[in-house]
Length: 540
Image (tube, helix red, strand yellow):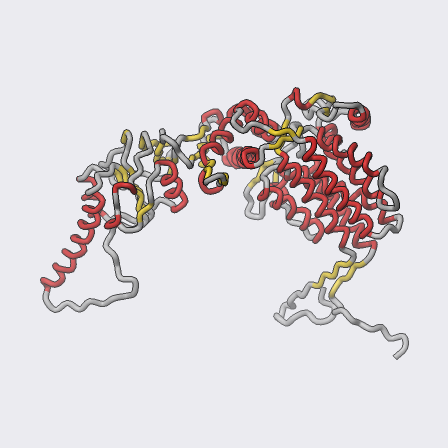
């Protein structure tokens, strides 16, 4: 028995443990961070990716890039996951969260090499995170959300790093108007639902300057009957989600007919039913009818005689948007239609042809609570990128409206927090102070990357920035991402919401902690043989 090897794990399972795993994880995280590194700041480069279907994605949005990359390494996968979290949570800062997390891990590497236990590093990181968030709160400044110029500045700093920066004036006002439109105050609780009520419609053709926020809604549909009116001033709008055609039975029904009059009677009943529905609608004298289901030819005929324009098979989401824009209620049955269900808030209904498609516009609403953003541009790729940038801008607006606290951009906050952590670390005793200090150094990666991306001398600028921050009242000094020189961020007007920064820090440090905790990776692949049996020994 002695000397025989005991196999506990299956043979085709790979197992790595200890130091090797930690260094592997750290280098994986660094690799992901390096992919994204050039995408930070106003001088950001774009990445062009081919997705598996053969489509092209051109973007410098951290989340969009990582979504398309396929990775094998589990640690790299979790890095990609955090940029998605950041995107869903606050919508901006996807690039910086990856760079920070990568840096946090790479500063931990030296401690692991010195045989320091990961849990010590982790507790120091935890402590540092608490202090970071506390410092952020201290140095943040409140903002008046009604002040339009200030709000535009904030959105401008978010858009500046994107491809949209050439049209930033236009993009800022679009994002701000859209968010202000969908903002709802429900007895003190603010609700800003961009996803449902601020729809971005991309129409290739035209130039980006033609893009605008409609005071109302646009739907990619045409009227059902060619003789219906295509332009109505101040329409009375009815929204239905039932079909205006004869109801077939839910289950298959057979009808046996003995006399031929019965057949005529059946057809007549169908017609009467449709006539009844249409009379229910005509009773309220609407001008415009949207339904989510179909409209039969006969119903079209009745509606046309009553001079009602009908549009069928509208998407449910579009219907909800129209309802919020013009104040109508969506009705499920025609016999329940009442006067208060009619929307009278819209000022103009028209059908326009853009490119080679017809679009229905319900615009000039009095107090719309939903809107459509119409984007024009040269090609689909450009439009997709513009839409991503706008989403970020709108999220930033939303964050500020929900939590009106601001921080300075351009690496100023990172330097200030880093300095504060350095001061605090002196008070710490024992071994934990070193990892704590390392976090402070890791934060400097943001200004450093900004300097690198615009091609200035990293060491020189960063040292002078550090020196600047040691003086009093110099919290607002950061790196000007365009030129790579030092300047006062409050003068430049580079602001970002506290929610975004806090979330970035939280996510980055938590991920670093998570990946440092791992000391064993067991990966087993079961692959099938050609005969369809599970691979036995030696199948990898």
